[in-house]
Image (cartoon, rainbow, N blue to C red; front, side, top):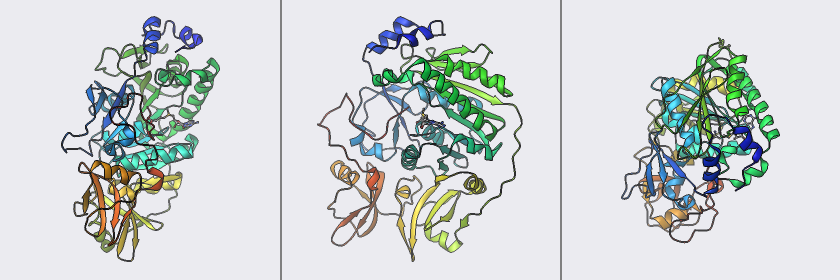
Length: 469
Ligand SMILES: C[S@@+](CC[C@H](N)C(=O)[O-])C[C@H]1O[C@@H](n2cnc3c(N)ncnc32)[C@H](O)[C@@H]1O
């Protein structure tokens, strides 16, 4: 692996940069794989997840390294949203949130650059049920992947939007926490993705810096006074890290916040204007290149009055019928078009504002489409940890679970009607058992398309739909 010489030269003198160790860790071919478990979907069956765990990630509660990289595509528990494959350094976000936000209180959190959903699934696990996460992605195709990953994660307190950062100016002072995991020149991921080296150049770094400033300037008004900004990149370049912190300090009234580090390998820096930032180098910690900083907004933001369209609530009778399908404690059932969905009761007024200001891709948990007195259940309901205990469950063995996820026909001896297909006690999706056949309702766009790998671990990694920082 040939790292760009201009990159190495630009890092000379940057705190924590050790040229020889840095080059050598990139040339070693070593790969680090890590996952973060979903606390809302514990797996208790024999052997649990069966993943080859190799110790905890020191800066997060639910993150673990793996001894090697298994084929996630052919693990039903991956599709069930019981864990997310996430780069370890990125999980440091948890420390920043826990140290500087009141996560036990209801929070409105905006994850502005969210696809494919690593930070958003993490944030969802850290905030309270009555909090609200708005997970935004500007690129439409990527917003669809984000929705899929968040649907599988299962939280009802999430809204996915597909907006340009500039649109958030309509929500002045609305959010308590703003996460900007900015698009960047990507040098931090060179070890994992050597092909990205070819796309790197000093001018790409400049271009990214300009874009990062625009994104931050556009979203800044949406953060309330005393709200928390978490800024991160996977770039080593000071132009995208320290210089952005200095630009924030010069442009806005804000205060930089220090973080406690549970691992001495994380390098604490002070920018020329004194802002704190945290650098991750693969030769110093077990993870990829990453940068994170926490900033408190000081200037005032006034909450504007919104012209709002109301939402259609279900009647008590309609809602009562839905409790057979979902534990609705603390949730409100609402109608959108033909479908009904569940949303945290305390956040319904926020949703009314959001739908007036943004282009929403999804909100809460879709239960399905009521037809006469019956419900055609939605995949999101199957993947919600709140799906009712009353719903019939059909445990599948491994081979049938894979057939189900490939959307193939199944031949099973099961009672008639809607059933949750489960594996190791965790729901995968819906089947409708008819007298002469079983209809597989796994979404076509989510199905496994890859060929099954040969038995045994797959150190090179099998093709898969979801893996990112
Ligand atoms: C580093 S990735 C986000 C990764 C994500 N936070 C995660 O943890 O999985 C940056 C995201 O910003 C989006 N993006 C690109 N250009 C953008 C822009 N001008 N404004 C906002 N987002 C942008 C990209 O599509 C990409 O999804």
